[in-house]
Image (cartoon, rainbow, N blue to C red):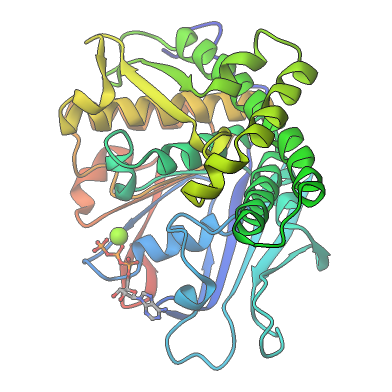
Length: 386
Ligand SMILES: Nc1ncnc2c1ncn2[C@@H]1O[C@H](COP(=O)(O)OP(=O)(O)OP(=O)(O)O)[C@@H](O)[C@H]1O
Ligand SMILES: [Mg+2]
């Protein structure tokens, strides 16, 4: 794999977390951790705080973190102030200090604040300094679970090519909720619905177009990946009328088609109590290429290997497009892989060039990373170098 001339991680900036400070985050009352740029292995008993630490790092990207938790849930039980996360991110241009949390917010102020080098910023601005991708055990059911989870996964993947995508999806969902509410109201009139459906159509097409573009890029990247790894290639397909059409027809035409569909679907949607057309109904279909089988029909282990392959392809794509190797959060990654697969995974991670955080209960599974990673023991919200 290392000799593949198309695998060009060399030009990407290496970005790593050099310091991490937490206060009142989950079971961490206060933590201050200094890190070298190499990979990080966190081991410890169940309930020690390993996933919590990865979750804290995931808040250094837009969104609700890798558990999609509420800010109340992530704030330490019994804390008198909100949580805070600070990190120093080492980049080729120097160190950037980023921080986020609720600490210092007044009563009732539940929005998380983001600061970059001491200056208030938006969560999307965090994407300028690092790209953070994760694989957690909760994603094991991605292929068999609800389509909403796959859409969320897909939309997070799109952030690699378009940092504005997250806000676009949120704005669309907000408009859709307004439309659904309006449809239930006696007094709702056509002019009000027109005023919502027009921007909704515009956002919907932008969402579909960004997803379709991501599909094109990720499938291209999967094509370029070597065949001889234990992580099988995936064939990804978007199921959704708008996503199908945007590649073929002009965006203006598809937008008009969607706007009409919303307009003509009002009676039906009113009866259903929700909007039945749109990109919020699309799905990501994944096939296991070597077996030529839909992912959801593959064995648990096959699904996991497929998902790892997909995440690694996406990590490589993100690195190439963002110009910086992503930081990877891999929760309990080693436990379900045999020795050969583990070794292959560590080699691929190494070659991707970013800092990877890996967790597990058994340190022995990470033995082959000795010399390539720093090891920490996690226990009761304390993290000690070993
Ligand atoms: N808001 C909170 N305040 C205090 N403690 C919390 C909070 N939220 C979760 N915890 C606790 O944090 C502990 C550590 O959780 P975490 O998921 O990080 O464990 P882990 O080390 O990943 O364990 P496992 O190996 O089982 O996955 C749990 O005991 C959990 O109850
Ligand atoms: Mg855990």
